[in-house]
Image 1: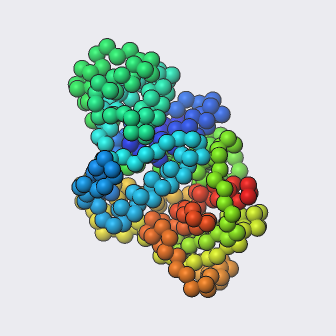
Image 2: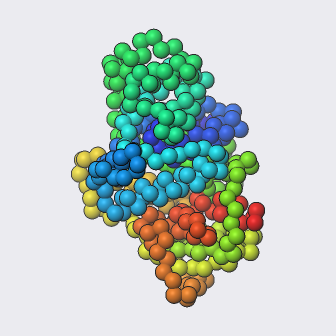
Image 3: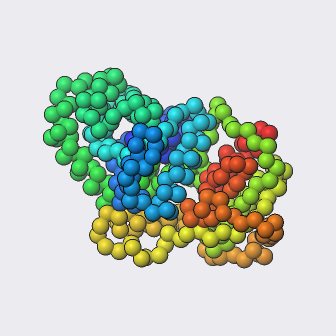
Length: 358
């Protein structure tokens, strides 16, 4: 069975939410996971911001669209964290996680049990705002609580460990890794925990058709309740990700009895070359995102655009606009179930589970 390599960053709530489902998959398949740190350079693609103690913006360099992406990311991550009783509090600044990454490299040298404990001991308190992971002395204490020997760690962190981490970060970015969690199996690269169903399929021999993307759910998740009797769906028929969701949406309606209201939206395409040229980190990051988008297109095997008539889509005529979640600026399809807004078809399993427990 191929090795599974996973890159994470402690300041990413998406990576935090990927830890447990990845571990469960590894346990199910009896494989080892090679965990590596990847330090996100968030200002290079989402701008920067700092909040004061009461959550007011003190300093920022973000566009309105970048703020929308950040706000939705926390909204989305808290939704899934709540299913599992996890806490994700908004951060006051963009953290430099290089010291925590160096601590991870130190823990890796002492075996998987220490590394797993270290990951837990960082993530849990950090997302409660109880841990300064930029402080080398704090990281050393975390290593100690994880069962690691710590003699020499601070010297390592300022010397050999920093060089080792710098080399790792450069190599990972040069290989096309731009976000977390990123999964690597042989020559295949997947960005996001929604690819875990396909990763499982690949690791088990690719028997049968490949599964669609889906955010993982557990049988012990505590689902939010909904009294909604309709699901609003915003789709762009020129967007392949929207097209890929249509059959699943129809199946959802048949299985749950939910009424579907279709709305046209315009999804911002990640493919234009403008701004993706050059050698800056932000330009390279954009190119890597475009390459990732094309990989996903190839996996979905969607080859052309379809009309509403071909897809048997009847647009809703209630006069409302599909202006929730930025009208496609964050991607598509977009769903609204009662007061809940979801961007992307990876949320369909959660929407289904919520509807079936009504």
